[in-house]
Amino acid sequence: MREGPDISRTAALIGDPARAHMLVALADGGARTVSELAAEAGIGLPTASAHLAKLEAGGLVMPRKEGRHRYYALASEEAGLLIEQLLAFSAASRPAARTRPGPRDPELRRARVCYNHLAGERGVQMYDSLIRRGFLMETTNGMGLTDPGWAFAEGLGLTPADFARHRPPLCRACLDWSVRRSHLGGRLGRALLTALEGRGWVMRVPQTRILRFSRAGEAAFDRLFPCA
Amino acid sequence: MREGPDISRTAALIGDPARAHMLVALADGGARTVSELAAEAGIGLPTASAHLAKLEAGGLVMPRKEGRHRYYALASEEAGLLIEQLLAFSAASRPAARTRPGPRDPELRRARVCYNHLAGERGVQMYDSLIRRGFLMETTNGMGLTDPGWAFAEGLGLTPADFARHRPPLCRACLDWSVRRSHLGGRLGRALLTALEGRGWVMRVPQTRILRFSRAGEAAFDRLFPCA
DNA sequence: CGCATGGTTCGATCCTCAACGAAGCATTCC
DNA sequence: GGAATGCTTCGTTGAGGATCGAACCATGCG
Image 1 (cartoon, each protein chain N blue to C red):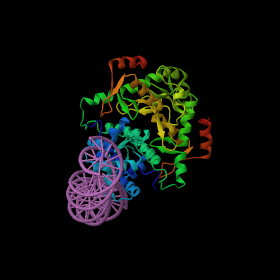
Image 2 (image 1 turned 120 degrees about the vertical axis):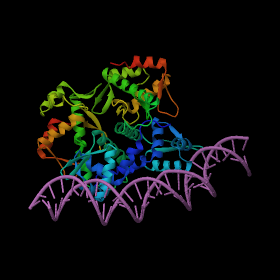
Image 3 (image 1 turned 30 degrees about the vertical axis):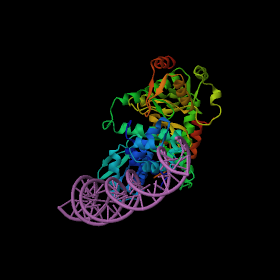
Image 4 (image 1 turned 135 degrees about the horizontal axis):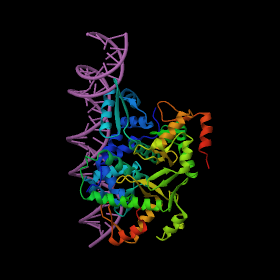
């Protein structure tokens, strides 16, 4: 007798190469138009339109209209986590068969967007640093900032009041497929990335999930989140 | 330009209903024969054989021969985690469309095997209790037992020596799809479930992932892992 | 209002893959 | 050694779904 929900339906949605391309393209948390996603996936507009309708019905993406443009984004952080998990598993199960070992990989490994927060080596460095200095700890309500942690966060312009209203988890350990350790997701993870971008320390590379640190940004980041 | 590994390949493997059935059937960490899995999925032997070959090539299952019998099990804990993630996402995205709302669901929610460790409300209770009493905490090396935690574990017959040899993570927070909180995976998670089973406090329900506590087992469990 | 652009729907085509029956192979038992 | 059981391979069939061109709809601009 079958138990639980039907995972084949969700998996089949992601199992088509064109749809998978579009989902990975959206994994940076951004929104893109139908035409952009069609180009990204190398298919025609009608095919892209049909595929996006299916992904929407399956709860993986959601649309937003702006005039004649229809933007699609990942529907939720859970969808982003699922894509990251699939990336992690696929990377692990076929390491020798990787067909795109180009210079871009080190950059993805170094620092990238994972839906809405910092991932990669820099993301793990930030996470480890927060844990080691006792700013972040696991509690029965999930992971949270300690009092010293909030004091530290205020130095970045983040206060508890910023996070008082919404329900999603403040902090979430997110397994990083590229370094197999955790980085920080959740609302705090998103806010920290926004703070780094707001200071100009880190910039996105268009059309990719790569994040590049400026020289000053790297120095500031290492000061704020020193390694052991 | 495409980045990272090809997730559509992994997802397509899981996207076939028969293959998905077999994977979910194996999510209790057990091994089953080709005939058993064929029956589980409602397909013929030749089809099951072909499907298992594909799942093996994709790194999701691995075979073990015993005489004329060929047993298949999930290939890794990562594979188990991926299946759990897909269960979590599929449950969240189609709650109203659930077609199997039978009495079994409460039991799966209450206590079940997640690849090799305790999941469900009992699993979350155990995790929360360990965290709250300071037996378990997040460190830069991932999650680990504290000194008081080791003292507690010795009461269950587990010592650091038991875990000295192998490389996989000792502890791992595993998101529980049924209660949306974490339970404990990793080698310690597995060892704790084994300890509970060894004492006869909990038993598996054959052909399912359900775990049933005995009366004495429930009392002992609540004593060892009290709620807040 | 007419044209341009972005996107959706429809119909036709083609390809892929799951399914099973039959045959064959490997292992175990009498 | 022969029979039974578990499983794999082969060949065939049929269904499903991705794809695109054409037609159409919605929105924006001059």
